[in-house]
Length: 611
Image (tube, rainbow, N blue to C red; front, side, top):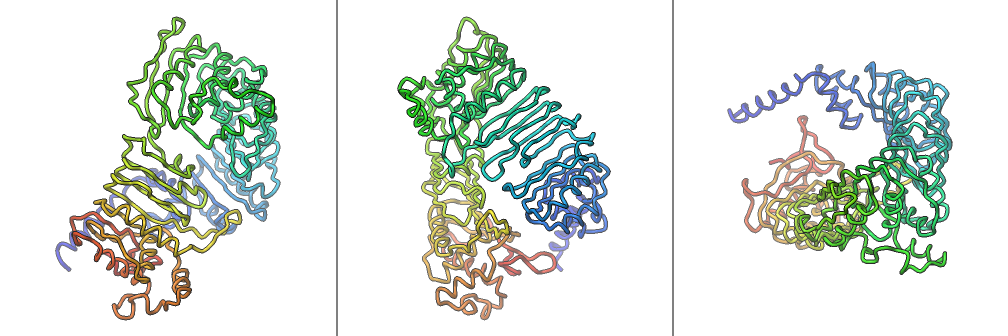
């Protein structure tokens, strides 16, 4: 063994020892950030790690993936005397007998934050009587009870509920002791029976494009009743859809309750459909001293449905909305629009001390300094702060076409597309320098990434047993077309990373003799990838093309086994397509499957594709 190799081994062992020598509390805190299944596997590292996971302060159990037996076994090995948070997710009705036992387990460990995530209204469930005897609960996350009665939960302070089409959630909330409420409501009925101790609340309405029918009359009644229950709350946050419904009520002349709010946050984009609701909220909040406006568009109700409703009520649209120039939902915002919006908020407040306006960086076509902030005699001492928010990948996954052509200063874009977040089908980002894209099995087109210098591309493969997501085999022909189109768009980038599944699709294209675009530089680095596309799916596709898998892969003549040959087949094609040749100083990385210490790799490559 060379001295260099021995030195590398010593450095690796020293690094491992450094991690292992950390206190248990730090290691357990780190393990809280990974899935419990992975945390448990650390017990195989050494005797030092054998029991570390058993006392992690937070437990997250996904019974949509895990069996009841595996959950029970995990809990039987858990020895921490106190659990800070306990998250349980399940949709299987057959687990109903186990749920009470699991909740009781969490209570026996003095859990402070309990999260119960029951999917898709799969079965009726009622909290057991012993649930209300807990003296440790501080925060409750729940989404599947018809009547949520928390009168006996004397120490519970925070309640969070998410309701949507698949998870209807509670229709009545009785929570007289909670101080903080976060509710993302569906278009179904929800009544605050008793929330008398609230000091903070965040409310919005979930809009689902699959069911676009807008129950405007019902929603207006519901949100105004909610406002009545929130009259004494001092800190309020309202989302864009909630404010749009308030706008309809204001146009119709419905009476609004007076509010004692001192800190108000408006989490909405700047458009004509929220102006009337914002005006009325400010006029009815005489004690307001801090106002925050977050100009973000989170799955807003389309304005056309609001217009249709008003027309059905006999209203003239030209006289309904205060600002017809803002009908494009913030996409074409100018400094004048922002100045007008700030002026409107200043005009309708009397005791305001501070105003913060956060603008979405995606849509900025002007410098923040260009906004001329108006002043009024009654509030000329207000501290007005304007700034731009950073682009968040999670926000982008809601868009079909991600057009960032006007985001002149945006340099980094990260998009994660999977079964749940289908994400944008087209990406127009001519000013972005760094792109990280984990694509789903559906198509995504890079329309313009002309300034790209760095890219990281892979394909997300998830074979799920979840009955609410229909799984289909990949369309390999379409995927080959898409990944080759992506290669053409990134061929001038000087630093690229390709994931294992991306490489496997390129392998199919190479076998079929498809042309590869020329690339600038190439470096190959071995890494462990995420879930790979199963071998038999690749084989089945090749057979459907009248090709023999045994002859396609180079295992017979090159001495590689099947899994390895898939990667090496395309790596040879990439090397040939690299205009400047392969070099250790260049920056194109293969993030594929490499063997572990035992020599056995993941599906797709069992060894031989390292450096």
